[in-house]
Length: 245
Image 1: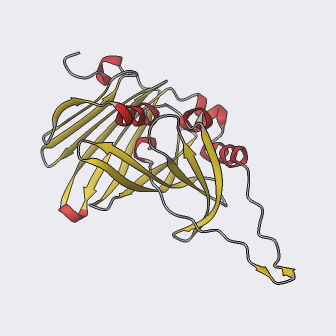
Image 2 (image 1 turned 120 degrees about the horizontal axis):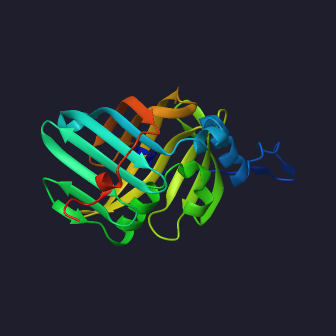
């Protein structure tokens, strides 16, 4: 899902010129608006997306390098509330954003509130149906070029928000779907570089969604496989609030 979709990479794009003679021109790049509209269409279309106002998801999570596995539950509600519960062999990690306060509770740091860049990233990643308001979430978006992602040709878009971390998006040049993101996240231990790959797209209630997300960092790789998605379920606002508030 969208919370698990974030990454960055370097693209080298060049045009060679032979002395006195130019090579055949490269395929023209689409505009940002064209890329985003194609993405919305690939997901199911604006009308279908706008019908969804909440979402829950369940799945499995695996960290092969650490020989750890467990379960994950995701909760999202329009316009800007999100929550996640991860259970790794009895070790529980919880995160939430209630529209104002972002918080995390895990065995290493205990309960804490997020601030600064971390809060800005949490607020932006909690935006429901972000594909419909990408240009509002990121003040500057630029098509940088093309790059291969696995066996796919991708259009690369650099996005810089007013607050928070820049993100590079990779959209499948043929079908328009987002297949990779590059970004960084700020935490108690500093910046963490994250490269996420969105795979195994399936249609649920008219919405095309990735059911496998691989998050690759310099320290570990994490694989999330979604096994259940429900839309327009009733979610109490209290479930997104920091416990004790």
